[in-house]
Length: 129
Length: 184
Image 1 (tube, helix red, strand yellow):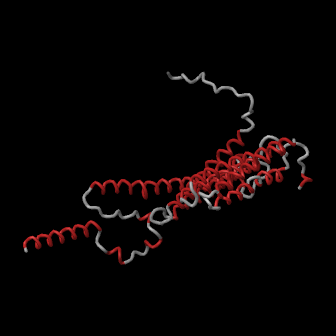
Image 2 (spheres, chains in turn red, blue):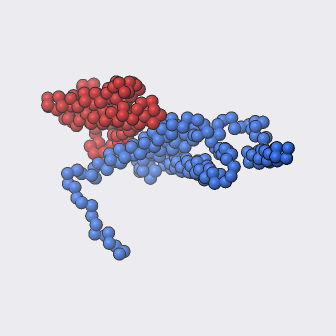
Image 3 (cartoon, each protein chain N blue to C red):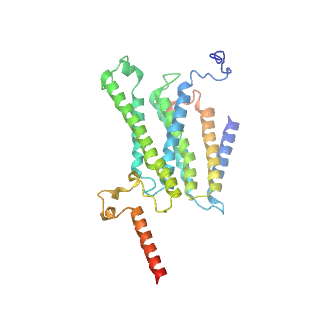
């Protein structure tokens, strides 16, 4: 469990490094891509809202959980689309866009890894909230 | 030849039970398609900011499609059949009317987007290629769908003669002045 935590924090740091490289290198120097951090922060929220609202009574499928998947996918797509649009109007360069997209991919994989490793199990109870 | 795919089966994959995850996969695919569509519209609005290139009223197609999407998904099959325990605030007939309105909005915005594609953009490209093949190089008048909010009421500029007529008049004037210059 400790190994998973260390590995996930390392990959999270790598992802954030890609994002900061995309902003702070001398060729680029534009800090608009940092707004994708907002998408990273709100991406787990639909999952938590759905988990709270349905009390997980329906084992297999629940409409609330699928709606949460829909909005989470939307947030992920938005986090990938935002740097591409910035690069299309030349606010940032395409090299910076590529770095930010790579950082996005690593950070979302890290978040998914957190849910896989720490999300299931009986110790994830309501009293934590 | 008629039934040559009858014995075809997908390769079996026992590692993941797809029957239970059908809904999750479908909602993820739906999310990807839906939000990719919206980001394409945002990209178009950002890359072509002028109303002559993209009239911002065209976004209403996307807005009504989104509204119709949520209206249609709010109603479950059981409510339409009348099977569910609680009847909802509208009942079975209300659920059917709600679905009807949702589908009408969806099809209407789809047809409107097709209209905009062919009316405002495809025909402009065809006219541009025809005009490039002809002799006069007058600028292409933009389609009335692409004009900004100042297109109504028509101002005094709309009473001017058409560009072709003006170009021909200019040609005849220049020809006449050239003839007088030669004669003198």
